[in-house]
Structure formats: C-alpha cells, structure tokens
Image 1 (tube, rainbow, N blue to C red):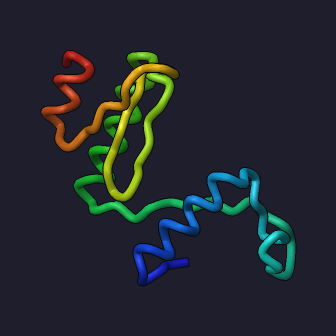
Image 2 (image 1 turned 180 degrees about the vertical axis):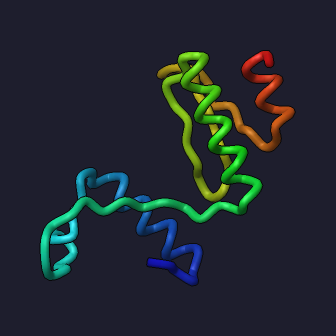
Length: 97
C-alpha cells in the first residue's frame, strides 16, 4: 500500500508498531492469512546506506538499526544514545572503519 499523505503514513506506522504481529485477517483481507509488514520507502542511496549500516551493526554487535521518517539510526544497546547515519562517512566514524 502506498500512502500519499505523510501524516497518514506516520500514523499508520506508529499504530502498527504498537500492535505487533498484524496479519491479513486482522485487516479483513479474504484468503489465506499472512503476516503484514510496514516499511518506509527509501531512496536508492538510502537503501544502499541502510543495507550497509545493518551489515556493520551486526558485525559490531549493535542491537538496534532502524529507519524513522527516512532517517537511519543505530544504537549499541538499551540505554545508549541513538546515532544518526546520514552518509558512508558516518559509518566510518561510528564503526571505526
């Protein structure tokens, strides 16, 4: 599903995060039940950056890597501050590459 209004998209994503494990039968979609995922659309550059960020986060035992409103963040563990990733230079700074 693609939403035209950013406000509605943000409301939908926020609601989906508060209710985990949503499936198609919850949305009254006929047929076999399947799990529903909500993903933000990213530019090609940000998709590549996010993919590389996830890879580096796993290699360096970071617990969290996510996208919010098109911005990429990583966090080492609960209680630590989230660090924004805006470029490949940020990856070098954060992970010491």
